[in-house]
Length: 232
Image (cartoon, rainbow, N blue to C red):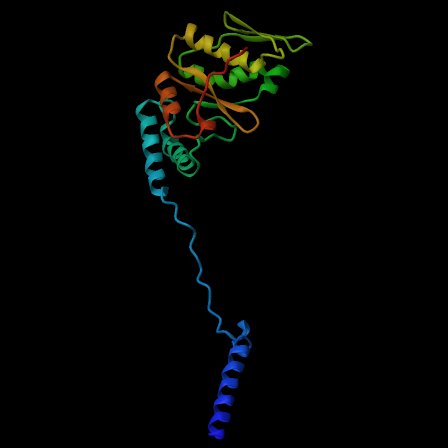
């Protein structure tokens, strides 16, 4: 009986020792077999295909509304591809320009208020004039006067327009107004000159009412939606 009691005692002590030392006998992490991490593919964008389809529809609708009517046939495919690419990737509107920063669709121009302020109204008008020519406007005479206060009078044919900078009205606003006067009263066309917001300045874009409404109602981000420049 004594022998049996001693054996049971040793057995209980052994069980207790295993319980106490159990944490210490676990394998350290360093001896665990290493599992190779699987390379994860970039996350799938659920709406990527839908965005591409939407971009194609966007360009198709532009075409139906006459957006590309001034684009040269040899440039048409690459301009459409460029617009669709940026719509699909960023929901932004970017057309394609040549090495002189003139858009190949004859619609979009970068407008720098500082250039106009420092005597560039005439040169800026001539840049935009390539589109006005498409609308039937012929420049027979263009002159400007500029005072030391950077106050302009711009003469185009029989038209004259004053560009007077002030703390409340930038000369670029007057410049856009001048172009719109020509479009509305001289040419009597539906096209107007609108602005598209940029990072440091903005671009201007020639659109008729149908195109303007289409841009405004599209899924483009707000910076790519045109708006009318208005002075105070």
